[in-house]
Length: 318
Image (tube, rainbow, N blue to C red; front, top):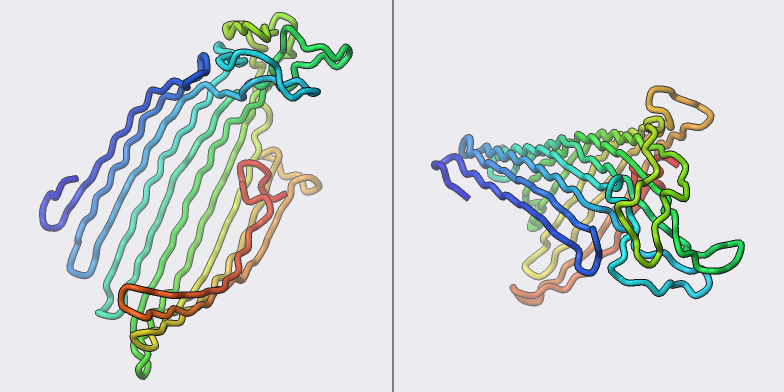
């Protein structure tokens, strides 16, 4: 942390990680991150805050041990790892820039506008064994062929929240009102990998796995999928201080979600690509009783709504 002058303050955080996983062979996590922030007091009424977040991680993904369908377990060493060192990986990243402008319009009114743009990535090939049971004989296999799952996600996001707050007295009641608008646009793409069929040469010994065993080759990429989400929200809240002992509060929020998913990013297929446009109206209300200055007793009631398939990087608008 550093105070540069009366108007400018800056802060920096730096992180480096190099970790092994206790009790697991060949499993690790490495990464580095930087967080930078600057707070600039432009005037008595205007404050500007900018921060930047950067993170990169690389790791060996670990899906654990195979199992036996009858007893649910196979007696093997806990250290055993069943991935391919020459193919498997897990790389993630994030770059996020946020800017906030706070303006004091008067002694009773202020406005705050926060804008964020960024991209996160999640790129991996993961091996997993599943069952170690020979379905034809019922015996436990001595060698297993791990299957693979993969993804190469990129999530680009831009959003803004602008809120105005106002304090005023109406009669003997003190009101604190907050109203705002939120807008966001998110685009998630995914381009998974394809692999050659697994053969006996790719099998890994169940009891003494050799993680340098050659993995089924990467043969290419599947079509890029795209999920696009646009969200618009408005809200208003009011907290009314009736006297020194009692406060009541309430608010409403309306959200509109417009989501579209394309199995092929460059080609819209009306019969198979889902869309969803959903509106939600939610609210809350409550009361606070303060029998003394340092104590509060309160009760509230509220509603909440979530879209189906809210994890855009999994099912999107389905």
